Length: 313
Picture 1: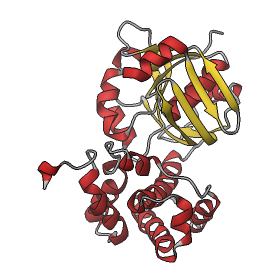
Picture 2: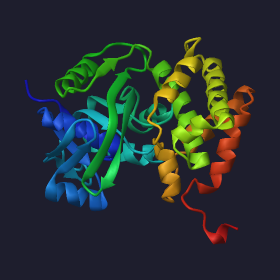
Picture 3: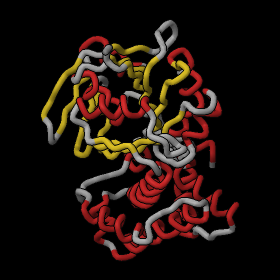
């Protein structure tokens, strides 16, 4: 049997780390990248510097566009949430009748956006539990983690998901197919809204957030508010989900900053609308108060498109 054909869209921390693992295990991987990152990958290969796994370099087929390529068996869709529609449209040449487009993005509504562009049944929900980012063009820095949970939106276990699970397993990636992927997405969404929101809002790593009673109390409050939204939306969140996620927050390395916080401090565009903005709008629609989430959203909104300019004053 020929190796699984996989396109990785978004060659940052998530896509770069998992794409490199798959390529090293023999999968036929194509990266979609751009700019200096693309040039470095083409020239030197993709270098992954891991604090837990050492350093490896893999030669990968990297392209700027997918025009002229054959359809892929699966796509790891790893772009920032604000690029979802444009990146999905650029995927069209790689989409066959049964291509699975696995969203490994932040937020809980990317799958609907992907299917709206590519047609129903392509999007597959997914959650990546990994801390990694671009250290320099062509270089991915991996701190820890590396697990993927994914599944069809209707809960079925399909051959295309089984093939991708097997390819990830062959690459020594801890992987699971979930029959309730929406619950998985919402559990991660709760955690990101709290952890990313507070590390960005305070400009402090999670260890500082934990050490201040007021900010740590706000962490829990955000979890509670977003959990209420999920349950009102019909998501079967566990009764103890807030306690479970607080414990996960307690176990994070104290120096950890979420990508939202790093993007804020680097003056880059923020994934704020897919995270706190979505929760605020959902709360308004459902008639559920979200004062803590709304405060984070309002405070970060001036930075949503990058560092504010004086002309905005």
